[in-house]
Length: 275
Image 1: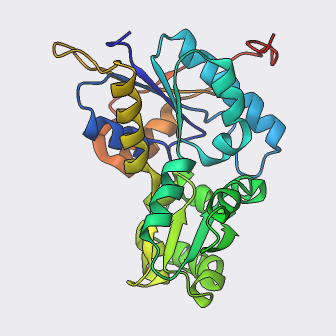
Image 2: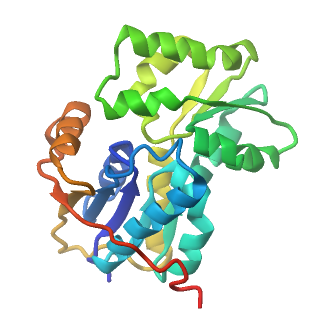
Image 3: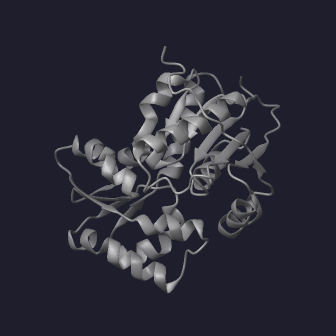
């Protein structure tokens, strides 16, 4: 299993930030990344649908022989993390816990803001996890158009800045000093978000911290790739065409993603693994 790939999943291109961080920290590891572009965006969809789509993609990754699953999607993590950990024999890493831990250690005044999709904010998962620390005041804000901008490849326009000002005004006025980017798409808009929030507000993104969790899990389970491993990075997308995914990946990350292949995720038996 040591030379088997790490499986990474997101609703679209946002999770590429996590894949890049994992590759930077673990250059010997092979990766398989699936963007569920057939159903993106997940944020406004019912939780039951997100759960079904997510498990279909994770089933596909397990069938492809991965040694670990990384849910690089906050909405999916909120919808089905427990299901995934009960369902699969391989370790499952998600992006919410690492961001929460970093936010707790970063804040100076105890006021922490969280931005995310409608699904993530509506689930209350960040509010619940941060709220365990009674010293913290947690303010959450859904920013549904942010994912739309990133999935359209628009990251630096005047419209992005205007929408960011509208969404973030309540958090800025509340005096948060730490802001969790509760969606892996949002780092692509970090310039606009940082500009609106100001230089005194620390932005917490889960990509680097999630990569550290991946490292810890692999070490503790003795699953690190061997010294002679020849890493390969495979990028896959669902839906009818991979062209749009590849175009966006090139626009957002340069030529790091050289090709994308299509995969089909079929209907699944939701009772699988729970018998």
